[in-house]
Length: 207
Image (cartoon, rainbow, N blue to C red):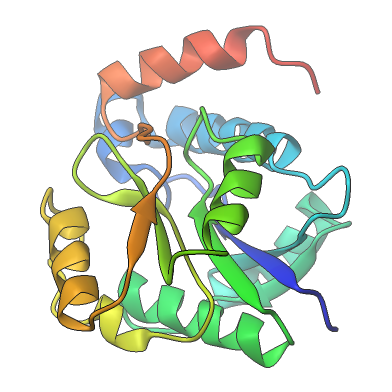
């Protein structure tokens, strides 16, 4: 496989109790899993590269659910996530994409209702002049990170799951004397408020 732009799409298997656990406390694990599945399918559709500007790879977890992912997303290129935390998993996915021949590589999450291919296209273009591209999330994290070479140090000493993730990541980038640029700030779905907002977006979605 050799493609100039590679997009890594991070997805979990929509199993009750294993996805959207914070939201599940509000709406129940079964409903949270059904919602996550629908949201992931929606975002996959919206981030498909219609003009082959990039090649998408779904980095999935858990590894044991490979068959389930093949049945769910049969036409997608699948690779297991590797690493003890989300930082290691992103660093490993990016490194793997560069080993596949990417000149630019980006990873995104599956739970970003407003994410679409135009944002991803812009992120790849921004890498013409920047070392790193970030898509900030409203909650203080980020939903997108991209680069032109493997930079695992960016993911060190980050308090994952907190509102400091974006700021700590930027601090690492500055310490490494790299140039970064941001694209749109979007929300991911964790709370009941996020769920209701996403529901309005998905309400009229076509599949």
